[in-house]
Image (cartoon, rainbow, N blue to C red; front, side):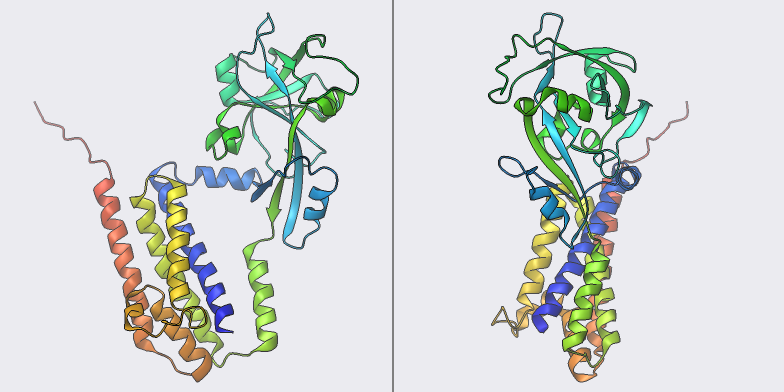
Length: 354
């Protein structure tokens, strides 16, 4: 039972610290604009792309899992922009929705001009702002593209014999990958094609496939875990456990603030948050760590909340000193984070009167 509490405790620490780091990093870079964009675009949580293909039933099976709220499969097309002589001019990723979900249910791009290509029109595409800038495209432009077989064609046609595609640009869009690249595919311009073009080209011109998945919110998962936990065990002081999570969340949120103003990138920040919280809570676990009663553990951030929860849940005791210790960690992290933020803020230029 203590192991289950610590697992939930660790998850809460990670979420709290991640929230603190992301908010701080966002405030020092672009504010909350990117977060608002993710919400408006219904950004997914996971991108699945197995070896081979997942269109044979894998994505559908994953979509039926209780933890998956929505799925949006996509298909990458083996087509590249070319010049009038048929030579490739730009490395780009072209993809089309496997059905009507990608771009409408999940991963909805922000349309800067025009609209998205209609599903039944193979001659329409949309390009992201990076591709439009690199190729000098606008709504109404025509982009010549060449289809390159990704495998043997069942009809025996070759890329040399296949005529160039002349696609009309109907929209200029912004995707989350074009703003904040995460994968290698995000680092090149994106071309959004229609489902009709994918069907017209056929399987021989399919470069890859994948599926974006939105997971059930952590609140629902936490409620489910709490219900199962209460079915087998009723803690002596349920409110002390609630206070414990508040104390731990405050401590790790302050730690997230400190990390957010210290490290340069989001990836490094999240790595530090996850590793620190996992090591911290693992050392406090008497089941997994036989040295959990050593005095050294008193100098770790989660020591106070862990002792506060154990005393309240099993013995009806309220350890005010442990709560104070946790608040001291919170104050220390917050003061250090604010001090680092103050030092890293640009200083206003001095104007000397003539």
